[in-house]
Image (cartoon, rainbow, N blue to C red; front, side, top):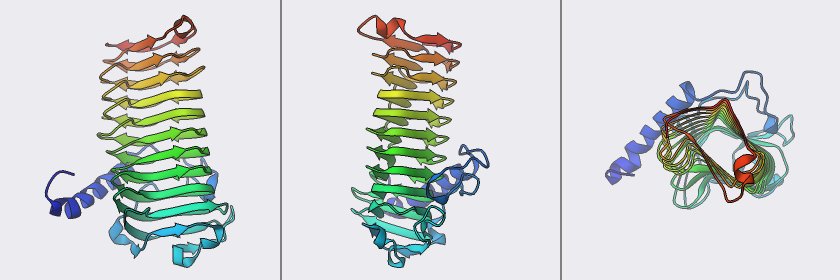
Length: 326
């Protein structure tokens, strides 16, 4: 971060927290009231929409949970029994860590919720890392990291909802049934989905400089919908080698690459998106077959199709789009 060491260590984090809280509280897309999310006992109607300020929380050391038996008060658990109706709850903490994860949970099958806390991590580590877990939810947290904020590996039935992230992105790798919704990410990496199945990335705000807004690779049944992606250095939304990909209702602005890039897929749907001001084009299809591209509004952008065989040009259904530019 630019500026003196004093600014970087004291004023800058406070400014980032203030920006995140403002964005999450007033402008983040919201899941409709009453639309429940199934994992970890949190519903969209009840889940908070803003992360807490670190100054309102109690300091706690980094948390390491390696089995269901490790969900204890010493590891930050404030209530719960680990069931779907009464999950373990880790909440109310301000955690600062260097070169270790702020919260690391692995090898668990109990239901748990991490919520209402703040984590700041320096060095090569994640704010929250979930590995080989089931039935976990992360909600209403304020997270700052130099590398990665949320890392989910080899896990299933996980919900990441309503968090404020700065500096580091959100990774879902080799997972099943993951929902990422209502989060605000400022600068750094966006949301990356790799080698996973049945993943929904919806109603997030991904803003400022960084790599891709949302990137999905080598996965299946991925839905990317209702997100705002603005000012990314590369493609706003990128989908590569994904089966049954649906990219719909997103607002993608000012991407350094394509607004929406789709490669190596069959039967992808790109529909009802607003794309504007992309450096290399609005929607790019590359080595894609049987794509449906409909009702997209492309402002100062266009639609490009690339391929190596005729099927990558003549099998698409392209209807109702309004390109107004390159």
